Length: 320
Ligand SMILES: [Zn+2]
Image 1 (tube, protein in one colour):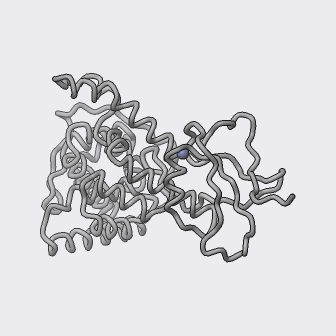
Image 2 (cartoon, rainbow, N blue to C red):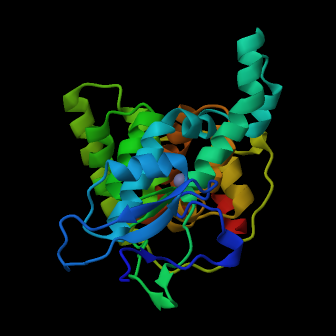
């Protein structure tokens, strides 16, 4: 009797598990590539949960990697609301929130676990596929993008989902990401959120100023001394100043002193920490402060004479 299927090896720990998402096993999906470029004769049986089994039946894919990614994308779409819980709240906020009424109380109790289940499923990476010990295909994740602990199948998938989660028009976010680069998704999202509410012309101007800012940043990226030592300065001892029609807020300057930051490059290394600190009040404040600090530090770098003799905070910078 000849075999009509090929079954993949299932390691002991993964018995009764869906290869796509880690949920309990329901049935094996028989995968045959479509289009079948390599003329594969026998379908490969992939252990699946009920949901992934149903999703697979509606997918055409020319290889296993594509099949896996398409399943993940559909899980993302289906559980968009659940995944968004993690964008809108932290676990603590949710626990402390005062939802009233039975339905909302139920939501509070189950929301975080719904988020965690959805996140685990979209992030789940299966096990290496072999048949009788031989690798079936090399499945790569090199195009995958992770943001805020959640995996996406690629940059365009991430941008599509994140635009929805953060309520930013997708074409605008795409444009910003293209300018800042795929490694700076969180910066791109903050920038897009802070600037998207304006007219087309203003958006174009925002993109232009972003390009200019990044070009300057690239020029000024020089190797820095490590382990900068910070200083604590009382807020009253820090001068407020105006540079290029931008107010340089003492609170942001104080934070910068505390971290021992005295160059643009060091500031960009601390970008996430900066936004975490000031973003607690408001994203817009954090963004405005960050821009002000970029202007301040850039001015100091471009005008060393001014930095040395005129900057009202020069005594503090000297201590860094
Ligand atoms: Zn599944």
